[in-house]
Length: 329
Image (cartoon, rainbow, N blue to C red):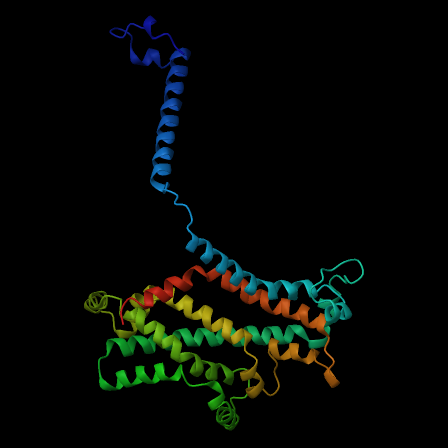
């Protein structure tokens, strides 16, 4: 530390002090000490603000915690069993499904390679990717515009349209699957392009319902200001409303992507030549009840990986979008 008493503060020029090594060390040390104290004060302030008093768990809290643990295990255990059995022999999967892989039944990645060859995995995989991506894109685009029109245009037929969309959510698929298959065949929709239109129809009900609930919470003054600036209805929607709808759009995308990716019944009824991934996996069921369970487990693992990655990358938007769409009725 510099000895400050040796300096004559009345006559010592400031520029002379800047060349003194002891003075420079003193200034640097004082500056570092001040920065350290300020940083420590900020951290202490943040710690005090974030600190919350911990309350002991009551008996009800322990019961809720136990229920959540049981539910979590019930959901996670089947996935772990599928993953574990994908590395075992076919006999071991059938006789000891709950046993861990060991030196006797562990086969490495043989089940994966065999399954990929048997079901022609990659064409089916890219068919599922194509159908899922374009179906979700069309659902988001068309239903968001429809919900915006229904919400902003107050007429009797828009109210009727909203009721019809809401009613379509409670109609069981089994009631319409046979006439739908016939109509799709007559209109040449029995291909990977036509099934996108069919998915748009089945996914419109929930999507319009969610988008309409969110649009009702968007202030109308924002759109009026855009129209004053010269925006037409289409430009107002895509430049003003659609960016605001992004949380609900991502929520709709996640819900519909999980449904379309895992769907087996509708592609089986509609598609003639192409195969989606759930359809291809069923080809591991042989004649007279024989099933290559080990290869099937491996293909199930490969089938769920893309949708799990997509879900975890967007899961924070699900509750946000659902809650935002429930602000106003």
